[in-house]
Structure formats: C-alpha cells, structure tokens
Image (tube, rainbow, N blue to C red):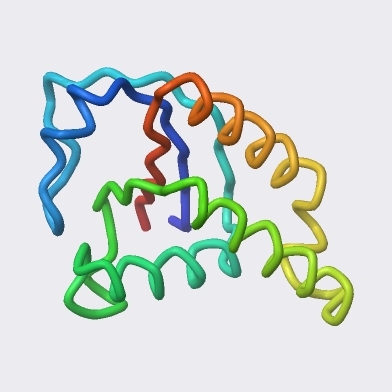
Length: 123
C-alpha cells in the first residue's frame, strides 16, 4: 500500500459536478495529466489546500477526494515546491522536480485552454 496521486484535466461541465468531500463521480472520465507514487510533500500541500477550501474536514479525510485547482493555486504550488527544493534536498519535492514541473506546465496550458485541473489521491 502507499500513496498514489493523480492530476486530471476536465472540462468545465464535468468540473461543475464535483462535490466537496465526495469521490469523483463515475460518469466523469478525465484524462490523467500526471501521476505520482508516494509524493508525500505534494499530498500534504494539497491536503492543507483542501482543508482551506472545504474539500476535507481533516487531514485523514482527504483520500479519494478530487480537489479542483485554480491557476493561482498552481502558481502557489510552483513557488512552494521551488522553495522546498532549495531548502530541503531530501524532500520529495526535490526527488520529483522534473515530474512536478511537467505537471505544472501541463496544468497551466490546460487552464489557459478553459479546462479545470483536479488533484486526486488514494492511500
């Protein structure tokens, strides 16, 4: 067992069906734009965001809960990950630097094309 995390790109109509705290509806089929295995630092950052946005009631409840991300949140994540890479060379943001950057670039491009980026995880 372990942490599996995904980022999806979905259209606005499907994104409107997301309900805070509930799993991704079965009728939504959004393509993955990223997959991470055991990227605990990313998940912790997303869990804190989910708590602030009301998508989780506590850290432990943030499991199989899709979390839509805005462009501003993508930019905040990018800044946070860059800072973590500079100060913590043993953390997973350092280990996943290339993969994270690919995700951030895809997310920005898809958002600029009117799509919604959603983070989801299973642990």
